[in-house]
Image (tube, rainbow, N blue to C red; front, side, top):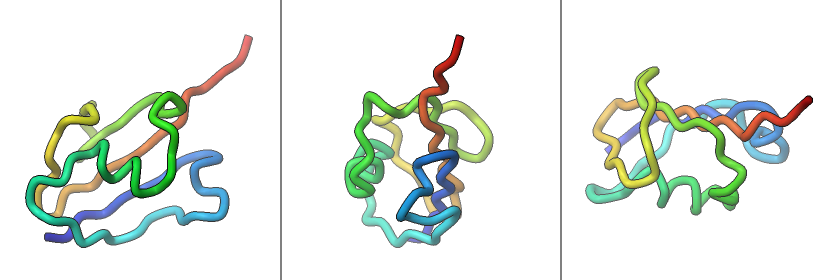
Length: 74
């Protein structure tokens, strides 16, 4: 099944801004993050179709997964 993955901030470095992904049934958001070689501890916000989600959720056809890094500052 196909989903779209959007990366934000420095997660785009040497990767992409948005990409269509072909995933197998049973794939989790965490599997996708791992496949992108993104450290889960660096992930600040995960969203599917503009709603907060977590690593254990299984995206479905035509979902849009957005991955944001932790934002630091003072």
